[in-house]
Length: 87
Image 1 (cartoon, rainbow, N blue to C red):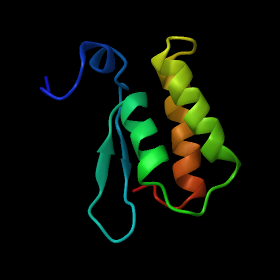
Image 2 (cartoon, rainbow, N blue to C red):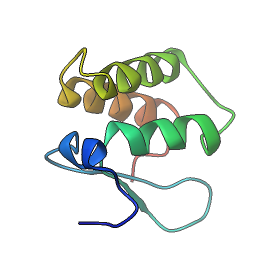
Image 3 (cartoon, one colour):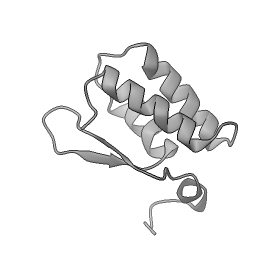
Image 4 (cartoon, helix red, strand yellow):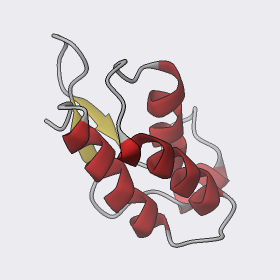
């Protein structure tokens, strides 16, 4: 277990991580709704479409246990495809 992750974050990890690439850097692994919120709020490209806000909203809802974590994952993938960052 990663020392930087809280028990709550680890508990909400996705079954299959999502790989993204922002800019020209290496691919990065997004393992949970908490990771996804961090990318969406601090690192996401300026090109944002309708899936961007939905992904943020659903990832926060998953963190609050209002929806299944995997539902948030699917919307995060849609946002990544829309912004051309899915690796």
